Length: 538
Image 1 (tube, rainbow, N blue to C red):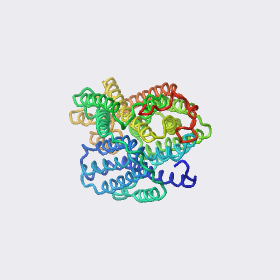
Image 2: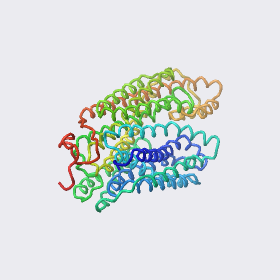
Image 3: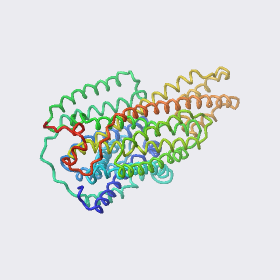
Image 4: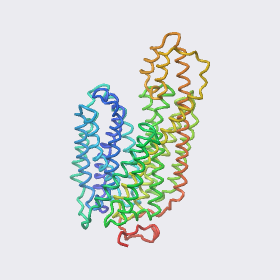
């Protein structure tokens, strides 16, 4: 597809970006709307599964479809992905129970994984590595825009309309994207028939599911050293070992292990995993500071993160174009990680009395660093492998980043919980009068920092106190905010440390010239023999 006319390429990318926006905004729009949805249909105890099931199905599908699309072409899978996603969205809006919603969101995840995997790979099909920078930057911008509009729109819909429209409002974009891709995207002839690695796919699925569930549940649903978590991680190790043995013998492996002989591929994936840990950690825990420590509303929290997102989108687009113009990427990667690390380090110095202006400026720094890195590692992976492995390499990159995000949220959540507990235990509350038993019971509800996120619930607890005990309540809230602030600044400090690991890893990234063609036989000397992918038959 590299030889298509430029106008057709642009139209195909418009269709791809429409499909990506359709999938990405449906992920972000649900977050703010879900509490009210669950309040309507019930099932609060299964709340997390609405997110977890989508994460599992989309991650697994993205990895498996990468290999299949290398064989049968991207068009069929991106069309199937859009179709599945639209059906899942339509069904999600008809949910009457939490179990139906979980089932339909899982169905959406299958489609979303196909869309995202094929979208990033299509850039590699249409453009040579030297040209991909600007388009990878634009795709990163699409993700940013979905994060910008999704949460705000989701909250507005559930506040003013029926919640079902959260899932239905963007269905027209899906129809438009499907029609454009069906008409404009050229069909690709399937390559020579290869056996499908069914056993390897199954074992890889078990590995990913057990790993993600382990980190998702650890420290929250179950203790880190509980039988369930140890069992899941043990299953992960055993299935990973089995997967390696299977792939070494498979004729057409779902994830060719010889790709890891390529140092650029390996270093990029590890750095991308660290980046995912820091990125998801920041996005998840900034609202705790804005709402929990400073007592602002969810709307203000959304606006604060919106500023970070705008800086991320702009820097992603700018750096993408600079990569295309200069053909260089390593310096941008290192620069982005330094800037993001500095932003996170500044966040680790926040205090309870810090102004929102200070936080916003620091989040702009984080957003710039994050945006700089958004297009880089995708380009390095695609540039380092032969075009025949483009799909599986791109999917591997996304999978590593998703795994990094899951691990990051789990580890940082444990850091916050442990620090919060130790701070509360060490807090000097001995000068507070001893509350009566019924008041002490109300105070015990405040041990969970999530209560600070809900100003209405907090006010209800406050009004339940006798007038003479309100001052005790206010003092306890101040102690709790101090403890939460200390916990969150520790989270940001650990996130900055993770960026240091990403920086050190990226130092080992070998910068090879960005190719100006997708022909694997062209420019072999520029790429260097040591960085050429070993063929399966060699």
